[in-house]
Length: 158
Image (cartoon, rainbow, N blue to C red):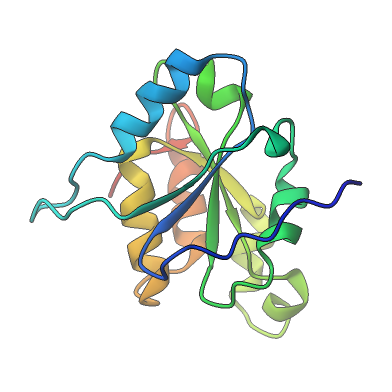
């Protein structure tokens, strides 16, 4: 397992997007454009922190989670991986940063265990997920359940 650099420049209001696939620059540009679109019923400005350096190439979700673990304000990280770059819907991998041990003390852990600690989301869903988790309006497992119930297993929006 390799050590990746810590992510320290993120503002707490920014969704963290880590690029782990470097095979298609055009696909990556399309993902960044999609992520910068305003969102929500009030056209909120997109708040995004992109981690785009080849040192992250091929990083697994577990490796990324270890690298961002010092950020106590972060509850979810989004990976732009090979699946993201190879699909027209550009589904990013959303992974919870909440350690399993912390959830085990709460009933909510059942939802994490049922659907796992990660799911796919469209770029449009990133902001809704990040915002709601940041203000504790919703839990990770609610979004994971919605993705699980979607025909293609990708969260879009409620």
